[in-house]
Image (cartoon, rainbow, N blue to C red; front, side):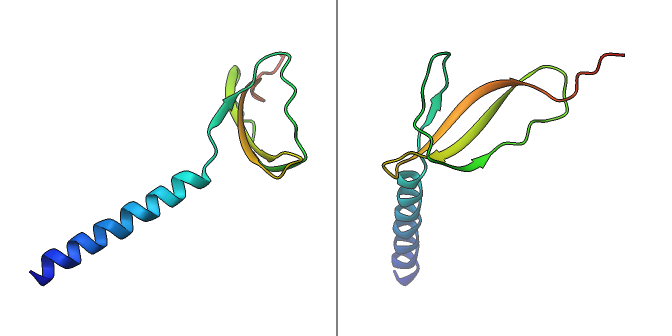
Length: 83
């Protein structure tokens, strides 16, 4: 019975932790041409990989109201060279 109680308690703590983490992670917004995101401060931006082609990137930023957003957008990789 003590083992069962310990397992249930552990499961509840894990679920609570996951729910708290999920609440902190902003939903990913898709950038479209003509979008005007309100970017006050960039928190993190993916590094452009050395590939020749279009790659999907993500940027996490804070707007002027203090809300955190994650924006996904497409860029050309850094691996294309004219020879």
